[in-house]
Image (cartoon, rainbow, N blue to C red; front, side):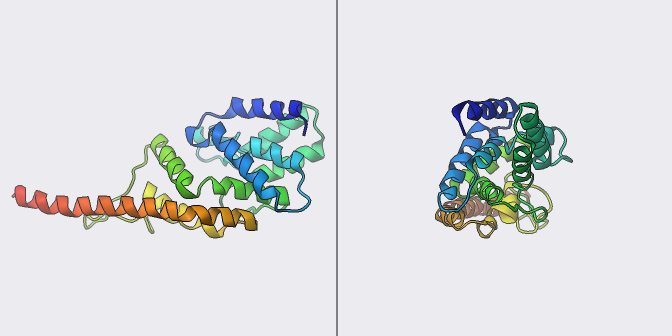
Length: 225
């Protein structure tokens, strides 16, 4: 990919990014991670990979405004239209579109090409370790969701099985389980190196708030009769 083409993609990406949990730095981390993963894979088309990484989250604004929309689907169509309108080959645009369509964390519509698998893995790497914890907390703040929920007995829920959204629920549903979801060996290795940091934060936070609530309820019962 020549520098002029890279800057065309970069400027379009920058014009679409407004979510601080999915900002341009997230895009760059995904791109840099993808390039590291790609070094260990064969027959990678870097023109497709770089474009898909740069444009993978350009549908976030639409999903944020309408949660019924899928940012991967919206972004894939926006990327395809952008590429075709700017004179890029339709086959190339279609390959980029397919990568973006399948990068989201979900059971259906898995990535097929090596470029799509690398994008998926690089994007998921940014949900691992300390980075993943920090980004999740930012996003929960944006959508006004709490750190944790309370059980009927007054104890702090660890998030496991919760239906109500919270940071603990997101950790148990997604962050804790993502380490077995990678397609490439390199991404799995990189994620494994980060896993302990995420677990330590979650366990520490859960321990602190659980202890505070237990002791606090007892103290309050003694003072309020």
